[in-house]
Length: 413
Image (cartoon, rainbow, N blue to C red; front, top):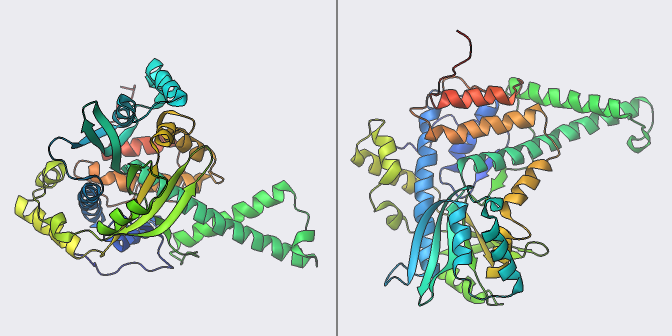
């Protein structure tokens, strides 16, 4: 049975993180915040498993319904929906029957066919391709996807680490201002060596960790919001987006943010508030891996369907989704051209300003949390990661092996 509002939500400061494509997001935020404080509860593992699996099922059905309202339903073989598990399927479909050709498109396709392994084809991708069929074959029309657990964890960890870094820097600046006052000078007149700045930063970092250890409220700048766990891509050649906006409105979407990208990457990024038809979400019986996952844990089909319906009915009225709109050529550039999505991910990882032990530990903790639902019979009585301790990557590798019941076999007798 899903219990939508468990007693005792920890309220130390403002919300830490809001994944707005999910339902029951306050509960997930509460668990993340408590785990940062090193305060797990006996039922956290079970709650996380249901939160993630039910949200992914909910989101999958939302995206399918919304995609059908945009592209049309699969009928008369004119529109097809095909699930894929790696990016190679998407890249292959893009070059299969381009809607138009020019020298740049021909060059991109030639290079892709010449050395396909250069293009991150094996990147995991939980998505569905939408194709239009005509006399020439299949044409990519769009796609939708749910962010993978590791990518959600990575993005959440990066946002939290940046948030924490800003707090530590403010505290370090406060220390510097105090030192300036002791000398009777203003802050900008203070000459500080690199060694002194490092010492002040480390002191402020340790004070922050001490707040976590002792369950003191964290200073907040408002909730960290992630809007793009569920997303769609649409190929749109019309210079005017008004017809698309009308289609989205009829499909139950309200545009809450519009961002234009111009430069190496050209597209319009929309954040939409979507009110899904709840009956259409909960009426189909739960099946596939979600059904088998809970059946392996002793649930019967009726209980699973009842719990999922309760989860959706007691959740928020709307969710936020990301919709990326671009021409075919710009989409091709983002997949096999000048601004490949995978290259941008690598650049983001390399450009992080704060990569100390605390930042790594936040990443470890959230990757563990979001991977937990995929593990066999996960039980977490004690957290394997505490933000104030230090770990090598080797340690986290062993932690994840243990989560999936992979024995560590050493070379010694």
